[in-house]
Length: 55
Image (cartoon, rainbow, N blue to C red; front, side):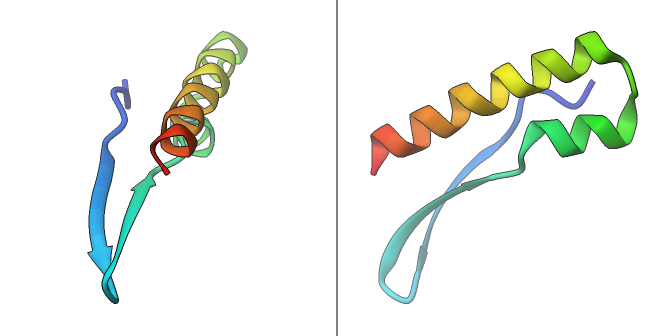
């Protein structure tokens, strides 16, 4: 499986940035399983929320 997803924190042009590879398209490339797609969506939503809260 392609989880867990790595979250990167880095500096670019003097600004701190947070990035991650979106799970939904990554897992879609590996499997067409609908249940797995739902897991990927949920994971992506949670990671996005964490990143937004960290800003």
